[in-house]
Image (cartoon, rainbow, N blue to C red; front, top):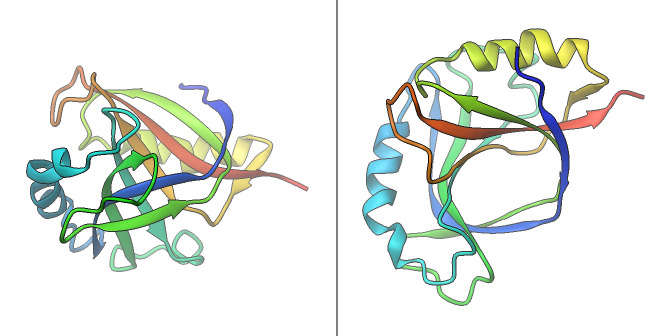
Length: 160
């Protein structure tokens, strides 16, 4: 299937909106509907990319349940936090090692995540790191389009 590129990133500053949800009570549509109409109010963004970031608890994947809660962000990367629009928040994404998967297809198809967590990760030289996961939605991203392209960033660390 897909082989990722392994990349080390430095810290990123993000501005956006967040919601707590679970896979059983998934509110991603609500989150993005509240963010997209306002994301142009963020004046100092570094790219035109949108970032869909998830903060899972340390035991989320160890004892996986559809009701496990997590925090999901809709955000953009910015140069600084000098101008934060009302109703939005800041987040500092710490740097580190990531496996980056170039994905093309429907964003409702979860088979890519099954492949990453059930096939690629166990067979790789890496383990999952307890840092945020994120997707970069660039200019080739189209919601619910089979030709849509995005990057899936999975936090990893070398097996010892």
